[in-house]
Image (cartoon, rainbow, N blue to C red):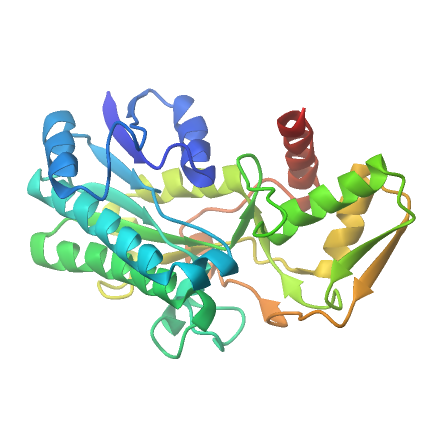
Amino acid sequence: MTKIYIAGHRGMVGSAIVRQLKSKSAQLITRTHKELDLTNQQQVDDFIAKEKPDQIYLAAAKVGGIHANNTYPANFIYQNLIIQANVIHAAHQNNIKKLLFLGSSCIYPKFAKQPMQEESLLTGVLEPTNEPYAVAKIAGIKLCESYNRQYNHDYRSVMPTNLYGPGDNYHSENSHVIPALIKKFHQGKENNLSKVIIWGSGKPKREFLYVDDMAAACVYVMNLEKIIYQQEVKPMLSHINVGTNQELTIKQLAEIIAKITNFKGEIEFDTAKPDGPKRKLMDSARLNNLGWQPYIDLEQGLKKTYKNYCSVIG
């Protein structure tokens, strides 16, 4: 039986990977932060040496919104760098050949050509607001590639587009667009509001992937035959984008969420508020060529997410 360690199993993606792997015949290993501090090298070394998993999913990270990234940049770069370095090096020391590192679409330059291809990595300046986090994630990719090149390991990296689904953060100040809209329209319905006001023009286009699709893609990439995987990647450009290749405007997204939450009022856009980038889409051709496609469409995923939100708020 394959022994699998999921680092970050309580997070949004980590918990979805656990859900995905429970249907497979595997022995899953998880540890809470209290049980294992991933920023402590000795603890990580001892744990990996004792457990000796066959595979590691590295989904643990310090994450946060724009405000948190701006306020605590040192925490974001240090903690993410140290977690990655500790887990990847411990895997190497214990001759664990298979590891999957989860990155983020923020690794790409601020003005990367759309849709963003893997090749655009390190071709321009990053978005300043989360640069420390992005630099740490880029370092994670390069750690995997460097250990592969020097020690012939099989450490792979995947970069998700905007994710949504169970386990998301519904905090008013720093949540992502889908949880923020779900909360806004739900409260609008509950309070019989005549209208809901949304930041910006509603014109920017975005891409969204349901988190269980992301988890399925992770398991798929982890278990691809090395010879097949290597046909699509290069030793120093080995990360893989995970997206849907489909985009919609924030206005279209708001209209779908209003319908799902059964909000009957008007939707108004506050054009005095900033829009952010006009378009942010991943090119997932590399993953599609490897034989994977998402299977949960946006409306279906949003219905599941809203159901989850209602159960969370009770």
